[in-house]
Structures are given as C-alpha cells and as structure tokens.
Length: 238
Image (cartoon, rainbow, N blue to C red; front, side, top):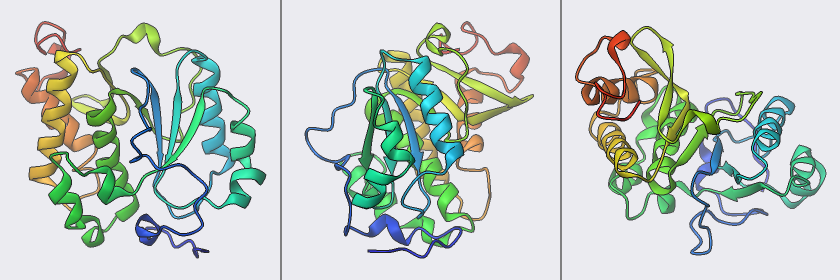
C-alpha cells in the first residue's frame, strides 16, 4: 500500500498492509531495561538522512544498549531492504518495530483516550501523536526516549536513570527523557500518563509534550522555580 505523504497526516497509523516490520504489540516484543527509543510518526514509511544519523549516533554511543526505532506507519519490504534502514540494520543493537497505536495503548490507562482518536481533531496530528507515544513507551518499558533529530555525541549512561533536559527557565524539553522502572520512575511515568489522559488539548502546540512533563515536574518538585529543582526538592527524581 502506498501513501501519498501529506504533512500532518496520520492516516497511515491505522493501516496494516505492506508492512515488513514486526509488531510492537507482539508478545515476543520485550525491550531490555534501559533501552533507547525513537518514534517516527509521519506517514513517510521510512527515515530521512538526518533521522538515520541520529539513530546511528545513539547506537555508536551505546553499543551495549538496545536501540528501538518505532514506526507508526507501515514500512515496505523494499524500503526495509534498500534504504537507510538497511544501513542501520548493520548495527546489532538497532531494532525496528511497527506500532499500531490502538493496540499499543491497550491495557494501559490511555486505552480509552487513544481509542477515541483525539489526534484526528488536532491541528498537529503527527506531533501530538508523537507526544502521546513517547510517554506511553516510557510507561510501558522504561528507558530513554529521543527525538529523531537528537544527535548523541557521547554516552548518556552517566546521567543516571531518571532525568530530563531543560528547554528554558521553567520549561522542560520533551525531546530527551529518561524514566526507569524503579519506584521513582514509575511514579513519574504514571503521573505523565495521567496528565495527558486528563488534560489533552488538540488546539495547543506544546501542551501535550513539553507542557505535560513541565506541569508534572513542577508538582513533583513542589516548586515552579526551576533553579530550585534538585533531588531533594523533586523527591529524588532529578
């Protein structure tokens, strides 16, 4: 099945034909703890050179960790074998999977919300789907989420298991997030899932991404003043 790529289209998310990738909902799909995840939520059906470079950089910087590239669209056998994906497949720690969003959210607190297809009402369907999927993935598996334009120049491991990056004073950047499966990580992941489940807005650009995690961190840290955020004020999280 061929998709005419239209910016902001998510029609591919509900397609099941011509897909060469294993399903992320399969019972055998069990990412290792502390894996690194990328989500590709457009309907391109592949990766551009910048995205491939970002994924390669994460793989090279973390040879002992699994790197998962999660596609919301079908990837054809031709693209799987004759594109930048082929180059990335040479790295033993890079894995690919297809996300079927309704099934992926099943048996999670976001099941009903995702099934109601709120993204179809969004002004930024691709981006808002990505916002939800990154939090859902970290809720399900833990690990590190990276945007597909994030270039990794050295290992992220020394940063620990639970951390985020500031975009500006008081605003968290949702492009790079680490949430573990420990008690603190579970608390944050559950808070994020609850936040997007109850406050999702289709009409605001950053409300469901940076906005959601910023609101949660402010609550967990008991202060909105980012200069005061620390392991002590943030219940051991930062």
